[in-house]
Image (cartoon, rainbow, N blue to C red; front, side):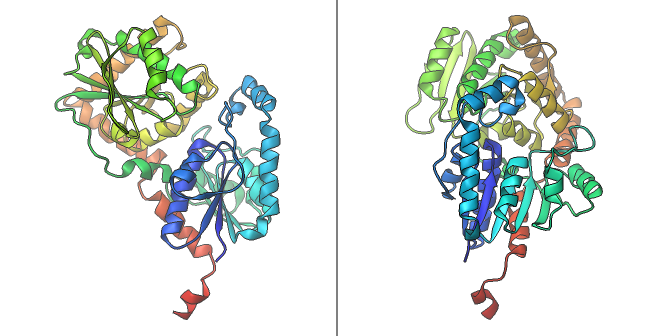
Length: 412
């Protein structure tokens, strides 16, 4: 049986691609992955075969967010690397019975070059940005070709919009990345207390710079919120943002180690005055599931938070990913559950404004009347903008319907 190829181009796209690939494997369909940006770590973690030699770039494939990012990608040779990845697709194109695109124009173009039957989960574009989606050239033209046997969007509004624009069927089956956090994780105890989750991102060195902004913001919270019996502070960190890196940063900012972790997956706690901050590695879903407010400088993780009905407070940084422009676009994509304080983020005054806004959002959550009503609004917003759990299985089932039935299955 020929494998299905997953083509993706970004950290969030790789995550959704890996979840979709795992759902196909569970159905007995062999799969392979070709991440066009970065190492495709999500595929490796899911046990999916990754083709070719991969490479990571400091922009994470997001150089389009700024001129500096574009120039940085050029200087690092990312264009040449991408061309080599596309050549790999061309060289092995007869190897796969179906190409599954997860991303944007780049993997769409790669699938078209492969000249094999293809489907697309267009996760990178949404009509929520402008009300009417304008696909970059030649993406719209390519997606109308008969080569693409099915087209899936990241939300219902986009499916309706593209169906009307293109005169072909688009459907919305949900977003696989939501499945990762909808499973019931081991709960984190917080009896009678509110919780604030810190999500500084996944790409270094940007994630470390983002964490610095957050560590500078926390002491600016109103004094009553410094009490650990009132507010739990938890950061969900990626493995690359390790304890040694955090220690150098935290010490410089006046934090001191309160509890060192013992063993893999353990919790580390830092103190500054009465503030206590827990650091968690490998427990992102648990931290996100058990929080009242998310302090975020992320892309996909913020979308997962919205899908769970969590309010998100942004702090734009220096990039290359989470710039003010990216943050503003994210608010248009995800709706009123995502907010940002006015002004920049690097000076103390703007951080104080963000801290005051965080306090007001936590107060609204705790209000016995306003809190439950707001949570219902956030849950409805999440269902509208992100969808419901089970996207991986629904997309995998739709793919299986397009594949030829194996001879042994017909004989049975």
